[in-house]
Image (tube, rainbow, N blue to C red; front, side, top):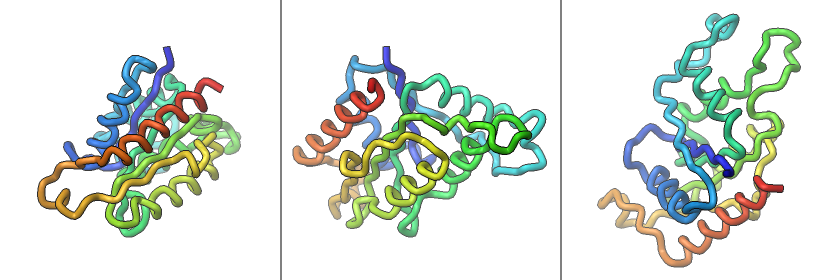
Length: 186
C-alpha cells in the first residue's frame, strides 16, 4: 500500500494546518496509509552534532521520509514565508547522509512532495512559493504548482479556532489528494 508522510509546518496541536491535514487524511481514506511526522524533538540545526552521529530525532525523521512513498506538507504562513520550525526540519532533511562527498544525496532528493497551506487572505501563497523553491533546490520531485492548494481562512475562524472548509475548498483539497496519489504512483 502507498505510504504517505504528512508534515504539519507548525507544532500547534490543533492548528488550522493540522485540521487541513486531518481533512486530507479523511479524503484519502483507505487509498493510502497516512502517518504524521512528529518532529517536535528535532533540535536546531548544528553542524557540530551532524556527524558522525546525528541526534536520534533527526534519524527518526529521516527514516520516516525514506520509508514514505510521498510527503505532503501542510504549512501555515509566517511573515509570507514558512515557519522556522519547518525550515529547521527541512535543513536537517536536506543535508547529505554522509560527510563526504558533500554531493551525496539527502532524503529529499527525488522524494515526491505535495504542498498545501491554509492562512490568511494570501491563502498561503508566500509559504507555498518558498517551499517550492527550497524543495526544488533540494531536488525533491514536487507536485506541480497548479495542482497544489492554498486556502484562505474565513474571518470567523480566527475567533473559533475551527477551520471550516467550504464545499468548494473540500473539492479543491480532494483534487489535490487525487493528483498527489497519481503523482506518487507514477
